[in-house]
Length: 382
Image 1 (cartoon, one colour):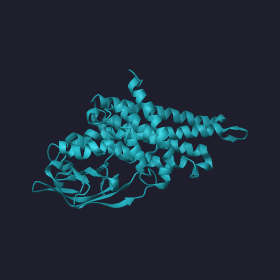
Image 2: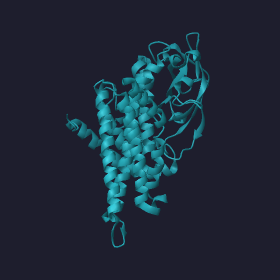
Image 3: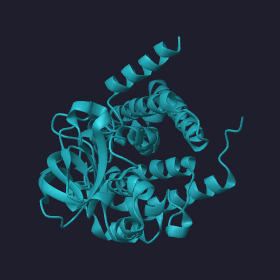
Image 4: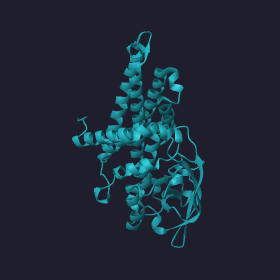
């Protein structure tokens, strides 16, 4: 058993961390306060090639393995969760099905510009009555001539209001439930495709989240992203484990930033004649935080290793996402306790970490859904 990152993985992680410290972290407070998409940072970041993180070098990507990808998500979230949401949506979920199923022409129009940061991608799962329950999807796609006619509304879409194209989950046969689901490419400028309300969030600010409307949208048949109708739910499963591990990595990034902030404060803050870090109850907090963060990191890296080696990681990915996110919530809560009343002031980072951490409870499956899934998997193995 080898618990060390390879030389290449270690170098990549350090390079990313240095980049985040140099160009992302210094802007994090401004991004949070303005709650506007940071276009200049996006352009600067895109030049570094990270938007093609997962894709082959021959199309402009970095060809990063799964563990390298998780270190990237962790470091990026440590710098700014809002910016991280937009970057990861573009480089993972928003382009995954286009890379896998898109025609050469579609890749030329969408994938390659997205890797360069010239276009922004997103994916559309959630509706007003369906999040984890994909079988309740009501966005409908029906065959019309040599294409598909799409009608429906999607909610909580990261990058939605600013996207240049989106991958839309729709049903071609509501009577079939999950087996009627399919993915379709819809590009900006298509008649009937528009952005609705923008959702103003408590945390993860700086990434634009909102509603996308498909009003009698027609797309050609090649915009069906899959080998045949009805396979969409199986394709979701192919990427879901990676999404859960990614969410856990982001949680670990927030926790790491909060932990470092707490440590610096505990060493400098003097109470009753000495730094508060000298008190046993404060030291106990750091012992607990360090322990659960190390456990979360091991779970994420193990799940990533399984994924990289094409091994079953469904349970591990679900457990890692759930545990890492709960770990993050514990760490940011301890940060606010160590900071005391200062944690309530906007001038300190603690309140931002506290707000950002909550959002990761929902991505990749709520913990209620994940626990039920894990329990069913365990019972099924007995």
